[in-house]
Length: 355
Image (tube, rainbow, N blue to C red; front, side, top):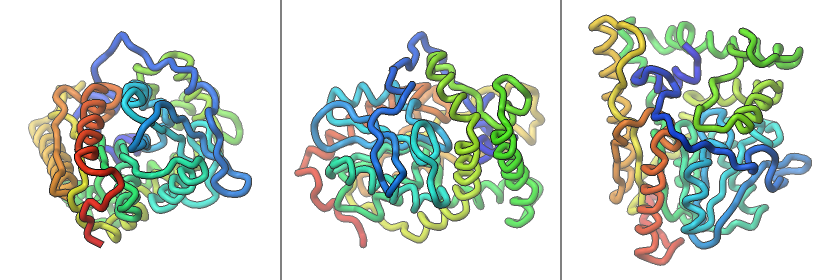
């Protein structure tokens, strides 16, 4: 199983890690074919930023593991009609320069903080994070509470999920054996992919299929092609390895260490629906395990929502893991609802975080 699927568990309850409703609409914005505003966050290194709309608070989007910002292509323009919306590419992804340090949540958060400051995008912010970016955005809220007006987490990863899912494994593996048998083979593949990219990856080959990830059908062919070009670079392969090897180790530890009540912060957590029918026959035991994994995933979403006294957890009917592409209206509604809650009082005021 691909490490991306292992980490984000969409493949545990859907027929594919990227399953979802087909749609006649495609993300075909030219903004995803070339850099927008390249903002220097440290000498000689720039991140790609795309902002549209006006108003406050600013909604800031962070995509899931190794995804460029194009995955917000349905949601971003809808929100920009309500307020300013800003998407960005993390270091080494999309059109952003490669990072000079490990891609942990703390380092990603620091990059984003510097990006917003350098671009003169002042708080308050509504943070929106998908999957692994849920860790990044939670850490940002813990670290800069006065800057945050609200948050929407889209089927977010949880800092405790690695150990919780390991405990469900019928093999009863310890943490070290889990890493050896489940996690490390995927990381070893990523290391091989860095070498392969340096020598030159060719789209469509078996080697490329091992090193890239399937293209979302909601992206137009030109946008897909831009993502494929990104995946063929050694820079992207290095960042893919760094994000994957850190997400449930260093990043999870960073978020866990900073974890605290979010007070009265407007917060909505969106969780994928129950398992879709499997694409191949499964034993009764495997079906039961899928259900148990989904139940745990949903429970972790509920726990995240409870971090705020105003937190809401919504199960998105018919959605797989990438809700912003499969059911974008659910994400748009959640952001608009949080914006409404933030405007019940002056944005930027203290929402009662525990410090």
